[in-house]
Image (cartoon, rainbow, N blue to C red; front, side):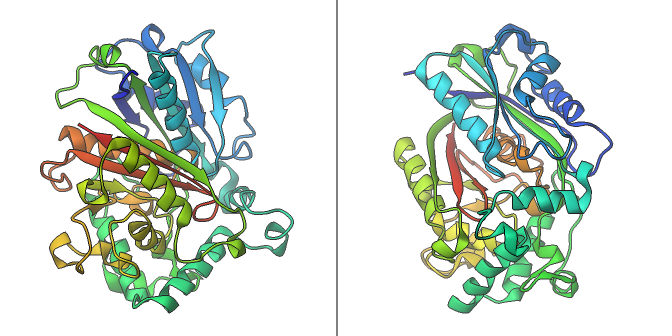
Length: 388
């Protein structure tokens, strides 16, 4: 069975921009293929993660972006899974190469969220909720996640100040990441003084609305060798994915079971354990998400995931030494919904190849985990283990 490699990665600028979705994609592709052959020479198929057509009134993203990078007559599909769309596109690319059906597949993600304004983004995201039981109540993504956060604070020793420390840590990482939407640090008091969006979540607990695109070329070893990478080859060693109940009321509010199962599957496939993971990009759409996903992925003992903001040596017994959200996470790097799962892969690729900026580079990193959620918490979750 072929061993898939991440041969090249790229992103567009992340944040509010006048660029269209196709232009954002073009910027990401240009970076990824700057030191390699033209996409038309190697790419056998394209998968595009895209959350909603409502932002630019555009479906057929597979065909559009294949055309936009000079590809003709290749399979090209849009993949939808709300905020997990990018990771699903990556998973499809990995499975294609593993099967031997394709030698090189372009996994993409793109979202032009600001095109619809705040109201448009809020409405588009609510389409991921159960229509009959949730959408019609007027519930929003922040209020859904606030339910989970309230319960987490009730059931653990965590406080709003602990969640604020996660935001501070991720902003510090984002300040060292030239790709990040927010390249500036913040402090605990600023986070605590920001307005509530949905208690206990404040403005600085929430990921921003982001325009952006990201790409990762998944390829056979032979094709990957055509790209001029200086660091070690990055292998996709394990993949896990699964769907949980769509409705929040039908789930455990503080144990993200779907993410736990997806991560476990990826670990088992890769032959690693949580303690082997050096860096992890987790889906911190809200600060409370990072705390809960640290526990679901096996990095933290139950009820202590909020200590992700602390240096590994200062965490409770039972924690691994894993560094979380070194990119700045969704919170500071940005959250261009359909592109987020691919942007996570870009960060771990840079960490494993030693090409991250010195301020955020984790020494001797050889193994990384990606966790990308869609819907509220784990309505669908995809996990990938990358290794050198």
